[in-house]
Image 1 (cartoon, rainbow, N blue to C red):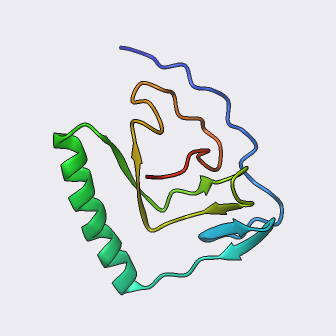
Image 2 (image 1 turned 90 degrees about the vertical axis):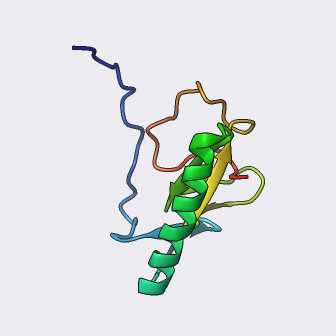
Length: 106
């Protein structure tokens, strides 16, 4: 059986961190709320992008991923659906186990 060495987890939590979904804007936690309609729509969009990305190796689709957009802007955003191209994050590049992904989605 193959084993994989994982990097230790980075500091993932902040004592002020909300329980549910949130974004970080100007250093403040902002709760993110979505409803049934938004979740169904995000699922449809994710499915279409993911199917296309699997047949045309251009990148990967993610759902509710929090992205660290610093130093460009002082915030961490969590779009319902996002796509990260292999141009922005190489296919074979290891992804950190941090709370947020330090890449700007395409």
